[in-house]
Image (tube, rainbow, N blue to C red; front, side):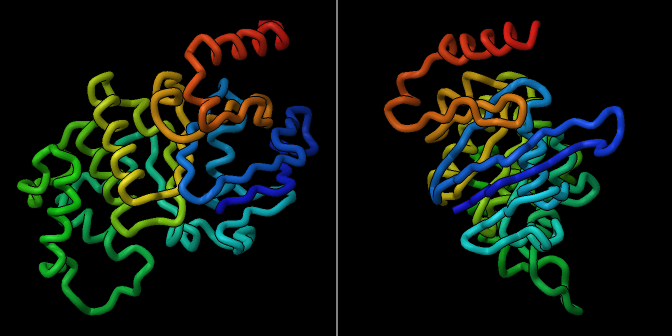
Length: 257
C-alpha cells in the first residue's frame, strides 16, 4: 500500500513566483490497484510521481510504502522497491548496450556488484521468457543494441526491465506519449498484461483519456494539487470520455480559460 499523508509542496518559496502546489494532500493506493492519473498541465501529476520516487523533496507530510516511511530515503534507495518508466524511450534503456546487457543491469538492481562477469548466462533463458511476453521477437535479438530498436520496442523493453524483478510499486510517467498511435496502443496492452499477470501496484500518469478509461482499475483526475475525481469499480466502468471532458470544461471555465 502507498500512502501520501498531509503532503505539502511549494515551488520558488519566498519569491514573487511562489506557488503552493500541494497543501495537506492525501492519497492512498491499495495493493493491486492500477491507477490512471489524468489532469491538465500543472495539476501535480508528474510532481506526485517525483515525490514518490524521491526525485523531489517535500516540505511536509509523509510518503509511506508498505508501512515504511520513505521521506529520508534517496531515490536510488527507493528504486529497489519502485520501478519507473519515463515518457522518453531513451531514458529507460542504455542505447549503446545490447538488450542482454540492459536486462542484466535491471536484473542486478539493488544488488552488490562483485568481480564477476557482467552477463549472467545462467539467466539467459529467464530473460528470453520475459521478452517473449512482449510478442515482438526481441528474445531472438539479445545481442542487438537497444539504440537500434524502434521507440515502441525500447519502451516495451524498458517496461520489462522495470518489472523483471517485481517492484512493490510501478510508476508510469506518460510512458506512451512519445509513441505513434499504433505503438502507443501496443505498449498499453503489454502494460496491462504485465501489471495484471505480475499483480503489480501501478500508478500511471497519462494525457490519453481513452487509455485512462479502457485500462486499469481506478482513475484519478488531478487539478491544482487536488484529486477532484476518484472512480473505481462499476463507477469507473460506467464513465465515458464525455464524462471526463465535462469536468475538464468546468475546470477551464472556473479558471477563466
